[in-house]
Image 1 (cartoon, rainbow, N blue to C red):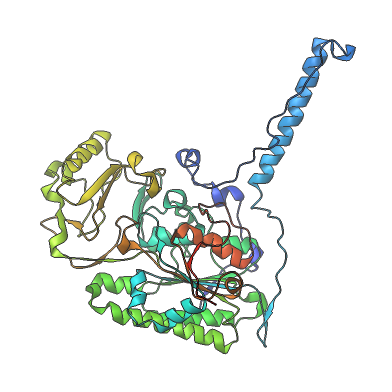
Image 2: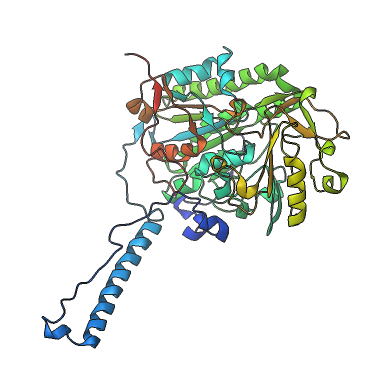
Length: 496
């Protein structure tokens, strides 16, 4: 059995302050941009005091009038301040929900349990290849979305942090796999000594929400779980040699723990599909799809052996889709930018993302922008200044976002004549492009009470997954960008 790092003694021991969970590292720009969907209170905000002049001698004195007006205003402001404070602290000290009955599987009692599994780079059309019997069975016994949209940019780290916080990248701070922060420097997703600094990761992840509610949590290699602050109780660090079936075995081992040490929220990251796609293109994708499906089959079988298949909620998602690239879809950036501007480009290999050096002078930004905008009609890409990004991207309000955003047409990649050629799969395009769509499948006892088995949900954005999981766990969510407050809209449900 793989050993996990255990952090903390009790689920309620998470050390935090409310400001640290939701506001500690936010810049003034981000706070003023209202990035979180916080509820506002409007009732009881306006207080008025009517004085009938001349009829009551007690109010004829100007001093008395001023005194009573001042007293009334003070009372009103105090009441309003208390109400705002209660709203602000509502999540920190939530109203207690009704306790749910424990489930007895014949051996032990189980509280509500959720297993969230991410299949990196898994496209919805992979389910149409007739090679995923176990994923198909889970969807037929539960629910699935027609597809789920990732957030922009459709890259691994931004979307994994969105899935467990319900926030857009401009709000949670992980704006790309690699980016620059003016105060902290360079974030590089492959550098664990950097990613372990909790200050990069804003918002409240699901495992912190769970721990606040005295639930134990666990994670296998989920991006952001390797920090030194407010992490899951059990953590398996990144390890590419750990196969998918092994990850499922660790998951069921955690479910075999005694009641008072067993995690209720488990996140599992499976990157092999995307990793191999980048290396080898689509030729061997079927092989890895079959391995993914076999791992899911192993998990569902182990749950069935433990009489937990109808109790545990299993949620399977992906972070983004992938698209094949080819030699006829290369954008040579050195044909567009002159050498004096090319030096500001950071790309060292072909990529769908065009990255620039940090702290560009304003005149350089404008020069690059003008050179690129002049070429957009002939070079299969769109370009925006950060402040002009279309609102649907939710990608303006962070000092970590590059001042110039260049988005290639799907399948095109940026390169130079000096870089080696590249064919394979790539990501990072428009997040609403068909090739970037992701999957959402779920099964569990609460879902069977709300949806018919085999129901197909209307498409939605992955900011909704966090709130969905808090409902399965019967806990209150932190402020987030999700908008679906009740059940997901259903496109199709099987006949009776």
